[in-house]
Length: 63
Image (cartoon, rainbow, N blue to C red; front, side):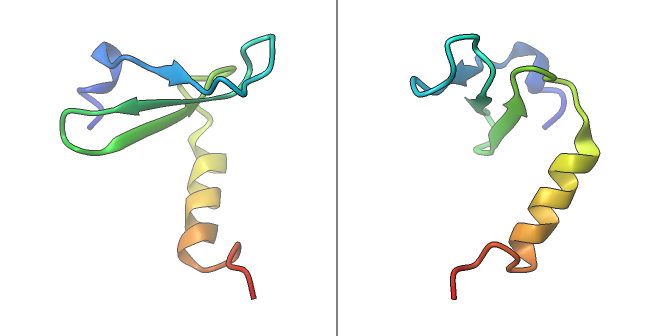
């Protein structure tokens, strides 16, 4: 997937802030979806890893 990222067309939500600081998304050729922070597109990965682990662990599930 990392080889796809430099040539990917990223787009922002129309609901993003006027300054352009928001989440960006890209549909990758591999069928995956890339997500990044427009303020810091190359990292930090630790926060994203913590978030995805929380999702997998059910931390954000509704009761």
